[in-house]
Image 1 (cartoon, rainbow, N blue to C red):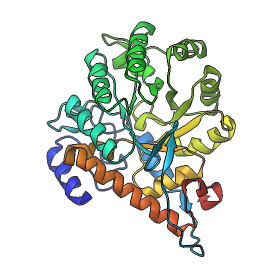
Image 2: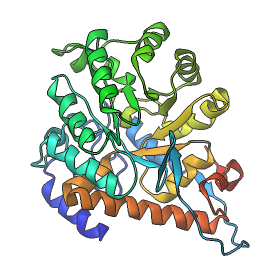
Image 3: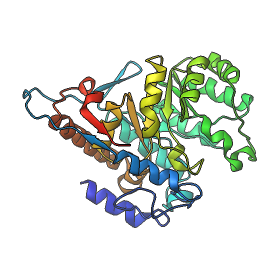
Image 4: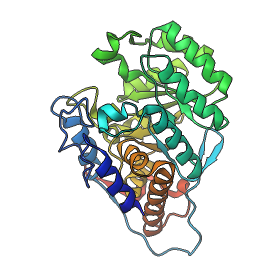
Length: 338
């Protein structure tokens, strides 16, 4: 079934090549487009470093049923895999699909798969309000992402999200350095710890900071009162020659020491990849480009098919490593060769 969705996406995308192995090599530097910034090395590194982690096999075990369910801030989900916030579908993928229709299908698909969609934001007000309206139709079951706009433009977005009673609010603070957004009609700006504390004071649900890629940044997030972080280099689209999220994950997990939830993204393409992140201490994984292809190729059903594919792969990895539940996926289940 996934092969059919993938084939349909490949036919509908005129910019993204929908490569069978989506690792950033074919689209180096293609921004706009799906590629990584500059040389594209950060996107490529995301994929390459995941292959440097090996899963240990242990098949002398019981026949207990394998359970992939996880907790997302008090809400049970079918697996600890979430849809990353994506926008600019026509611009970056070349698919004849508006961002609004994309978000409708994405949120519905994640609902069908019993997981959570992170929705996007943009320089014009409707680019935040429209996705939020869709989340409202789904009883707030999702996470709106707010870019690090200047304070007033963040505040009204937070207030709307609070009123919608969403599961959490995210801010991709690494977008603060994007030249096109710094010079846009609604400019972004860097945020200090004190700025983030003030922002946090208006948030009535868990606050997740996306774009943390160092121990220093993670500890600042803790100091600011964040409830979660996403270890991420923004799909390799904000800084050339940056490390991958998976490279920094274990060090950040150790430094944070359980003070907040830790998620990670960056070229996760299989249930095996998800297993590796969980073994290194992540609470969950966000997936972007393949989920976009799932929406383009099959709408909400495409997302459900894709998430079920990842779930099955994760169950297989758990079965072959002697894990029966997500909590069993521990550091000793993998070998790190980085």
